[in-house]
Image (cartoon, rainbow, N blue to C red):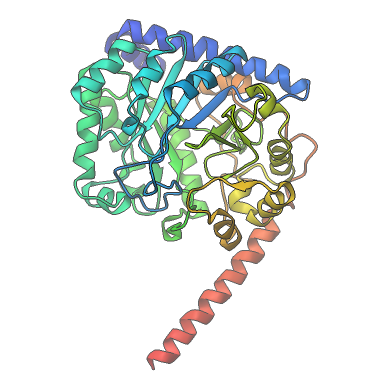
Length: 436
């Protein structure tokens, strides 16, 4: 039943030209890029088949827990630099690029970047506020771009989460502009304690389907940056609830649901640990992922004249990051063992890649938390198609083989959690004493 309903949506609700570009540029060529990545891994080379590029740091919102320097002087990766980057990546078989920010649609050349590479596919992570009818119409004309528009809660919660008034309605207007112009559109949510009960629901998924949204992505809020807002973090039980929900909805609802942290058997993985993706920030610094804001390489030729492939494959910092992540946990080493990451940064003298210059202090002050790794609580895919796709194209690629994670991060996390609870209890006791 699910398969027929999904097929019906694809056949009757999508523009066939855009559907072909999605299938060919992302599906076929993207799949081939992953296979090339697996062959390179056997040779000890790691050039990620999926690159995520923060093309601008500026944003019109001030979201809780944002780690991007959105209020600093605007920095962009311009059209010329993007052309060099994509041309070199394309020579390695890449065809998919995630455009991130800041708010990517504040970049004055974003659609020129997309237009310059009709044989590639672009996913733009956006709040939707700058997607006017004209912008949506242009995306439809190009056909090789999909906006992934973030909705972070109801009207009240959205304003709280995003630091501005009227956010929810402006975001919905951007979604409607895309759908009215037949653009392949996705909606994502960063699940936090403030929105999980409103958006991690069957009713919300049904509403997205009724609107005409093609895909959705529920990812878990990660406490990073100068104002991590840790009170929004999900509990381990809520994280497992989110995974269970995604698995069940994938088996029942005619909408594509993305996840980036589990294989088909429900085992956790890190896309940076297996080398399938890395991140480039607005200053051109190459980072393991968006929340690891340290770098030893740059895409810009003036700073490093080596070809892009050499910068990735010869980077000792990136290589050691992957190795450390693989040995430590199947989850997120940034959240679980920030102390080990700090040691790695110091070992390689990796530069702070932020404008604020406080990334190391933030890392050293982090309290270890659970991530997607919940050993003994694996939830396998129920949908056969997702399970098969992950088996061939999205799994750990064997990088965790030979590493026993059963006793790696867990005792450390428990001890740190107990220590933190004692600190909080002591603080509350002092507060109570002062009040009395």
